[in-house]
Every structure is written in structure tokens, then in C-alpha cells.
Image (tube, rainbow, N blue to C red; front, side, top):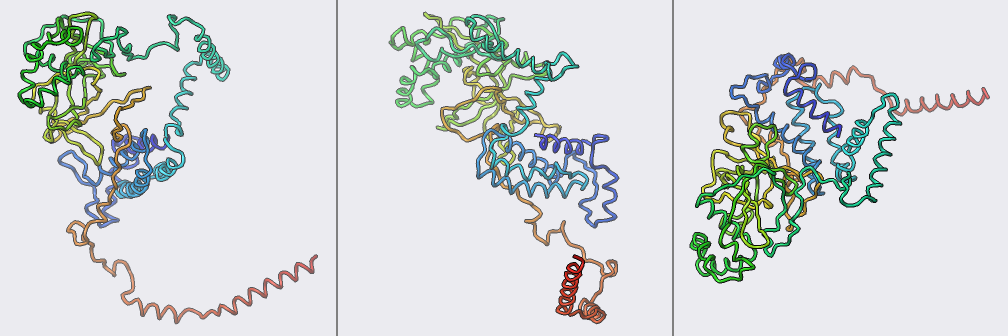
Length: 500
């Protein structure tokens, strides 16, 4: 933990030129032309406000190294590759940073991979849980003159209350049964005949009656029908008979006139009777808020991500967007059937609007390109939260945002299908290559200058110099030297015996 923190503190303070903490300055770079004939390493002025690739890339690679090392999934083959990568990354950093930057902390990352191979995940070895527990104990101190005793009393009081809470009735509120901050209250206790209406979630108390347009109403009804398991057999039959293109536009009309049991799916074929909107909704451990509600706040909870299909039998397409409205649809019949939908604005999922940089495990979306098809609704339970980080550049990267997926705190996600670890877990580690080693020697930017022998004060003919040196040297007989040393050693032993 401290290696990670100290390493990035030094790197951040040096890059941002923090006064009193930086380990590099302009004066150190100005001395470089006097001692080294490498003009490409001299201090240069950048006109495009961007660092060269040979400078920013090693910093990105060391960041990705620590991210993969601290992930929740570690693979042996990836750790072996990381052990080779960290050596190359350290060499790259030594070429762009002064020697004063490298202290003990900058060399310790080489040993972290070996520790992970022996000890496993860093979550159970590093100081994160222990410092969190110590900090929590320190915050409970009231008597500054008796620190240790106060910490012990706080811990004992907490254990007593937790033990006694098991003897309380279930309706008594205590720390043990207190709901989480973003609790979704679980599923509705009233069991519905249609599983699509048994959705977890908790919305804000303030709700407003909403009237949908004809286009919005048809799209919302179609989305509910297509995601209902009871309707799937009818949909499969029509798709086989007529195909996707002809079924979806007229599916609602066809489904309404069919003779079906009223206690199953007849009620949802008539559409919702009322629609309410809300500004906040908790589901799956996430706290979602509309774009308008999150506009002037420090935290943004309007980013959404969902997996879907592109209509070409590809069901693993990532759709990223921003939802601007939360709708609660209520259908007729008993028991009352309610379902919550998110109305979203989707970014273009094609290569023109969404791209993945696999080497750095980054996903980018172009917020100026929107999804062409009109399909704005998703079921709230299927939504996962993301947020978007803009690039600081104003020109070539101004239209692109970086997608950062939110990781749940205190909850373990278990997928039905075993997918590859992604983003928050360890990614496929790529081998770091030293580009300078692969360059040809005849590259115009890396031509070796001819050394002037007069400046170096070296002899031009090494053979003549060696002969002169050997003539002046005295011949030493190794055997005679060894015998003299042995005699001296024997004399010392005889002297010591006489002394005794």
C-alpha cells in the first residue's frame, strides 16, 4: 500500500512541478547539453500541449501495472508477464526522469509480483483493511489523556451492543439490521404471476404524473412485452414465420387481438394505465439520479451501461448512455403490477462512436454521436452505473469521454455466465515492449556520432601501448610468491607456540 502511495506521490509531484516536493526542475535539464550529445533529450518547448509518447506511455504503463496488481482476480500467467513488464517499465522511466527521482520506493515494485505469486491478493496482505480499522478506532477516542484505554472501551461497547442486538425483536432498529445506504428494499412481497413485475428497487417519494407521447408509449410497451418470459413463445413463433423486420413494428397490435388467459398476460397487452416520474432510484446497490437532478451536484449518477444485441445475433454489445427520466408504469388487474423503466440517450455503439483501447484497458465514447435507432427504454434492474471523464485537451480529444465503470462497495456480484474479468478485475496483460530496442541502427533520429579520439585522450594504437606497458612492468613469479607467503604463515605458527 505504501509503495503504491509513495510511488505515485513522487510521480505526481514531479510531473505537476509541486514546489518543495518535485524531484526535477528546469535547471537540471539545462545542464544536459553540456554533458550529453543527445539533442532529442534536451528540454524542448511543446506547441500542442501534449507530452511525447516516450514520456506519457511509461507513466500509463506503471499505472496499469498497479491497477492489475491490486485487482480482485489474479492469474498466474498474467503475473509472470507482469514480472517481465515491470523491469522494462522501470528502465523506460529511468531514461526520462533524473536519478534523484529513484529512491527505494521506485525499485520495490519489482518484488511485488513475486509477493503476489506467494501470498495471493493484495486485499488480504496490504495495510488497507488494517488502517481502515485503526482509523475507525481513533475516531472514537474522546479522552485524549487515556488514548489506549478509550479505544478499548469503545471496542467493548460496540461488541456488547452487537451481542445484545440478537435478543431484540425484529422490528427494533439496531446496527445489525440497519439497511445499507443505497438499499433497494428487495423484491415486492406480493408475488406476481409475471416475473417481470418482481423487480427490486426503491424510488424517491416525490412522484409526478406523466403523459407519454404516442411514440414513447409504443416503445415502452414493446420493451416490456419483449422482456416478459411469458410472451417469448409468441414472439419466437412470429419471428420464424415473418422475420424480425416485419414482427416488431406490428407486434403490439397483433398481441392485443389474440385470445389469451386474462390472468396471465392479457392485462399487459392493453398497455399501462398510469405513468409516474421520479428523480432518483436505488437498484442493484447503485443510486441513480436523472441528468437534470445531477446537473449542479458534485457527484453524477446519471451514467448508465447495459448489455444488449445489435440485431445480428450478437448479444454482447455494450451500450453506454445517460438517462434523463425515470418512469414507473402501472398496469391494470390484481395484484397491482408496476415496473420501472429508464429513458436514456444512447451513444453510438459502433466503432465510430465507441472504441476500446485494449493495451490500456480504456473504453471511450464519442458524446457527439448518438444511437440512430429509437430504443430509449431499459428495465431498471438491468442497468449498471458508469460515469464519464472528459479529456483535458480541447481539440482532438474534446469529443471523447472515458468510460469508468462503478464498482459496488460491500457487495459481491455473481454473474450467471462466467465472463472474463473486465476493468475492475484484472485484464489481459499485454507485454510491454521497449521500442528503442526494436529500432534499426540506421534510424535517422538515432545515428551514433563518431567519437573524436583526441578529445577522449585515448591511444590510437592499442597494440603498441600494450607492448610498452608490459616492458615496464616487472615479472612476478607466482610460485615464488606463494612459497614466501607459506613460509611467513609457518613462522607465525612457530612464534605463537613459543609464546605459549
